[in-house]
Image (tube, rainbow, N blue to C red; front, top):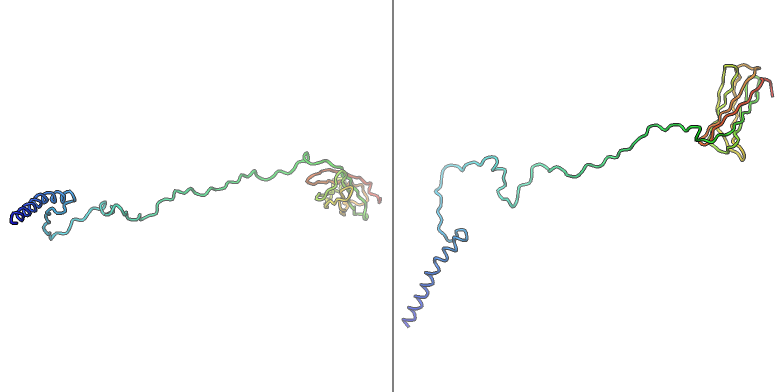
Length: 194
C-alpha cells in the first residue's frame, strides 16, 4: 500500500511540475494574468497635464463626445419659383376685330341741344361702347354710351350734346368699339329742326 501511495504522490507531483510552466505561459498570453507585475513607486508630483489636442480626443473611441455645433445641412434650399412677365398687354388692333357699319342718328332736342343716338349693323352684341362727336367748324363736343343688343342690331343709347353755335350746320360722328367689332358712321345736318 505504501508503494501505491508513493506512486500517486509522484504522479500528482509530476503533473504539478508540468502544469506550472503552462499556466505561466497562459498568463502571459492572456495579458499578464498570473504573471508577476511591478508597481510604480508613489510620487508626490502631480500628473503631467495633457496638451489641448489630447484633451479634445475622446477617452473612449467607442462612444465619441457629441459635437459642440450642429453640422451644416445638406438639404437643398427650396426652389424659388420664377414667373416671367411680358409687360403690359398691348391693346387689340382693329385688324383682329370684325368691321361693322355704325349708323349715327342726330336730332335737335331743342334749339341748342342735339340728341345723339344710333345703331350698329352686322353685330348683335353687348359690352360695346358708342362714342359720339358733335362738330361745328373747329369746335367739338363728345359723349359716350353703352351699347345694347336686340334681336337684329346693337343699339347705342341716346346722349344729349350741346351745340357750340345754335342755328348753324353740324356733323355727328358715331364710333363703335367692342372686343369683337369696330366701326364708324356719321350724319350731317344744316342746323334746322328735323
